[in-house]
Amino acid sequence: GESVGLHLPTLSVQEGDNSIINCAYSNSASDYFIWYKQESGKGPQFIIDIRSNMDKRQGQRVTVLLNKTVKHLSLQIAATQPGDSAVYFCAENIGGGKLIFGQGTELSVKP
Amino acid sequence: DAGVIQSPRHEVTEMGQEVTLRCKPISGHNSLFWYRQTMMRGLELLIYFNNNVPIDDSGMPEDRFSAKMPNASFSTLKIQPSEPRDSAVYFCASSPLGGSFADQPQHFGDGTRLSIL
Image (tube, rainbow over all chains, first blue to last red; front, side, top):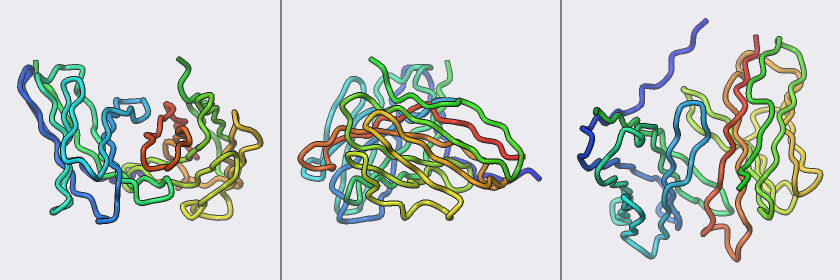
């Protein structure tokens, strides 16, 4: 029979607007965090990372913010484009090279 | 640049058959990871290798699953016998070995979509 899957949180934005995708992580000892983008039929693609000794890191059109006090991570995408439509995952390194992935957020960009 | 290469991209087989998934990591990367992705459970780590040696296989669901890495450029994930609940997308990822795992992002292949009938 057909299995019922989880419904991903969805963020819908207008092209050109800024997007903010949020993530709560679980392990206060995690020291390294990564954002991935996954398009349909493809594997997760590395976007940006941040170490726990930083609270902000910027890339090209993307910024990651880390709040260790509340165990919260966010990804900001400036001037969102249709090509940014995908599922975005945060991942935390819990030690020994092991990553734990969040459930993902689906970003939909309206032209 | 060649990324992580997985084969086959799609596999459809009948319950009870043996399934072998293959992965070629990025050249020079010392760590290799196998993941499974389903709608119900998301992305789960099955096993990972460092310098061809299995480090942590606690995510391997059952004895029906096994993984090998005979050399630095090749790994297999085998399911024998396969069951319908094994249907999922299986990803391989690799990362370079630095002074600490903490600073190295994993790079993923495009996965093998496995359907067990």
